[in-house]
Length: 262
Length: 276
Image 1 (cartoon, rainbow over the protein chains, first blue to last red):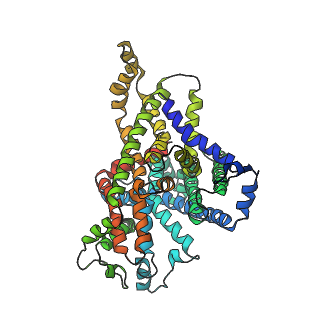
Image 2: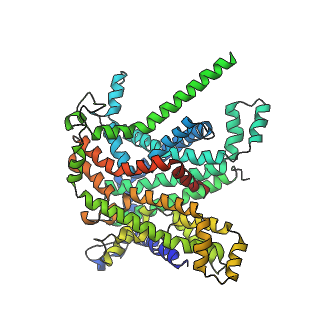
Image 3: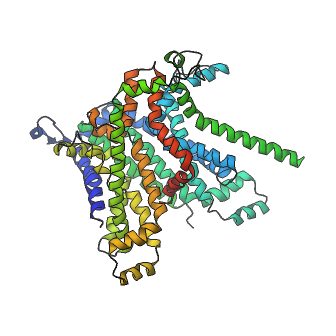
């Protein structure tokens, strides 16, 4: 009964991943397979010397850092403030914040390209109306990263708000009552009680968010250079795999000591 | 004094909620507005908020820009076939992992969970080559078969199946019920919410998928809607936002309509993700 499931995972994930690791050590000749030869770390030295690759890597790192930090901070605030409220407007707001998460990146990308269009976009029209200077948004290398992060945060924040909100509901109310008796301020309660208690879920969110963000890297790399049928692409994929693996490992080591498991 | 402050606080809180709603909903309203504008309205400053005369024919124009009936058909086939295949693979696997003791069970379950962490961006190239060798590049198969194992679905369903009381299963076994019968008569009815959640998440993901079909296809014949819509921008350029947005609505509207009716249910499904 488990044979089809195991078959699917082995044939479409495990073997391809191993294949990519193997390929990354070969100089693959598409036209003449006989000329394909083992070159050790040749592909790796080549990609790390290529400006495109290192730029994609650095950009992905910056992008991941900021999306994770901003989403984490805002999602905790939103979940604490909105997550436990039961009135109609709060529920509607939650549903509204969540909506972008289920819409495809293609559609969202198109909508924001329009909103951020330097000439006919709505954002610049608003900036102009309130007397601020226009921005080039995605069209300029100075503001492109910020624009992409803005869209990523807008799209994903609803999801993380819901997850963290779910975790908050499991916090025993007696703890808050005790904190209130001690005259603990709201910020203190948040930092000293809420966050430590929901730290396992925050930890989970941190991992999936980071891995999710780093996936963008391979996409950027494919879009900007090389194309998929490129030997260095295998090395690039392995680098992604290693980064994801290392991040997961580091998180576990660093946070396992600080995270409170109940 | 205290009461007054409370009232002001409540007003501010309502105001913030309304602002949040505008921030997250307005871009979709804006898409609809542009989709109904004339080409001139959508590409001039100052911007047009509400079109003077709604241009419904934009949808016809967009629909004719590319083989959209074909794209839509492909998307529907890919979503339906992949979801059906996932269900057929996932349900027996989750049942076996939950109810049977066998050698290597934990190892295989661990394998499925670990493989789940490997992003498709790492695996698409060998799979594309595999499809090439099997002469399947110009078919829909490479966009269906590789999705067969839904690791998250197996994980979640297994939890549900484990919670079904042993006595029920034992009683059925005493009646000589087959595994198939136990699955159909006991397990499936008891885990309906989990199954429909998993399927819903899967269908939304498949409908929205862009990267995988982009990597797996080389011709229009087999491309889904997402690729067709994304390509509108290249063929139309930046001066026909009205047509691009009209096309975009074809992709977004079905999801939004479903969301309006089932938002609570969809949100709950996604929060299952967090249990992992």
